[in-house]
Image 1 (cartoon, rainbow, N blue to C red):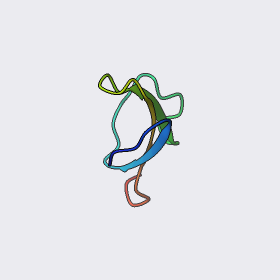
Image 2 (image 1 turned 90 degrees about the horizontal axis):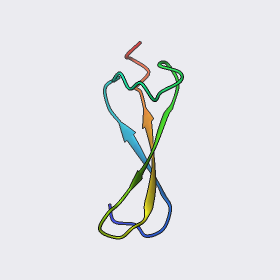
Image 3 (image 1 turned 135 degrees about the horizontal axis):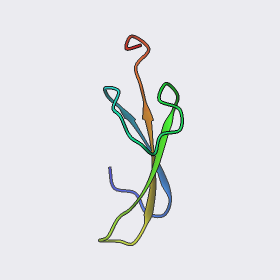
Length: 52
């Protein structure tokens, strides 16, 4: 998944505790800097509906 510029990556995975997440049951967004290219990537962590 190689994209230039600002990209959105939807990551489906198990629920995880991140102190930066204001709503533990809602969507979790993180912005990361790719050091190699200097681009910023926005990642949205989506929790499966069957894990509540």
